[in-house]
Every structure is written in C-alpha cells, then in structure tokens.
Image (cartoon, rainbow, N blue to C red; front, side, top):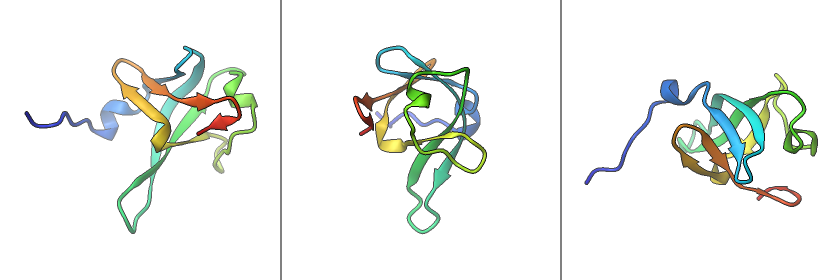
Length: 89
C-alpha cells in the first residue's frame, strides 16, 4: 500500500493543537531547506494567547510560531504537535 500524501494547500488553515489539546493556532505555511528539500518548520498563526505561544518559542518575521517539523505527530482533521515542558523537543 502506498503511503498517504497530502498537499500544502490541504494543510494550510488546519488547526494546530498540542498533544494535551491546547490550541496553538492555524497552519499558515511551512519553511523548507532549499538545499535538502527538508521541511524545517511549520509556521503557525497564533490565536489568542495560547499558553504554549507565550512560552517564548521562536517566531518568524511575521510573528508566526516556528514549530520544528519533527514535533508534528499526526495530521487528521487537526495537526497534533508534541511539546515538552520547556518547549518544543
């Protein structure tokens, strides 16, 4: 069975939650390493003052959270992110 694929256009606007169900925001875009083609970060527009968003995580020049791609754990109706006690793992 071939692996399931998704397109960025399908992901943009999806809700991003922590594993504990805390709302981080909506996926706006991704950051790709142009040399390797590797997806580096999910760029998330925060909604309100989510606790995780206030913990000093790195942001890009547009104020979006830069969530390391390796922290993405699942994509279904929402995108689930793993967050450790001190931020992204």
